[in-house]
Image (cartoon, rainbow, N blue to C red):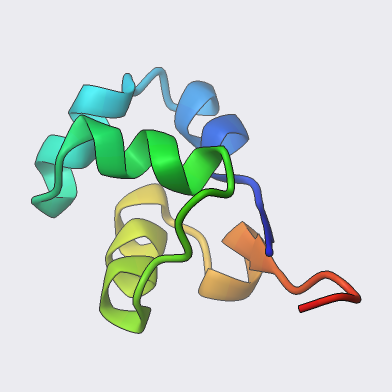
Length: 66
């Protein structure tokens, strides 16, 4: 699964720690999502979308092999 989390975060001048604190997870969780090592739960994806002012579909896209 591809994601635009790093781009959207950077556009708002949020560090990984800033974003993590806003949604109640660790900085390592944000890093793992950004690098594609971890696919977030639905609840976490919705929280990310809300904080970043985007829809889940704008943040995450399926790849052909998903």
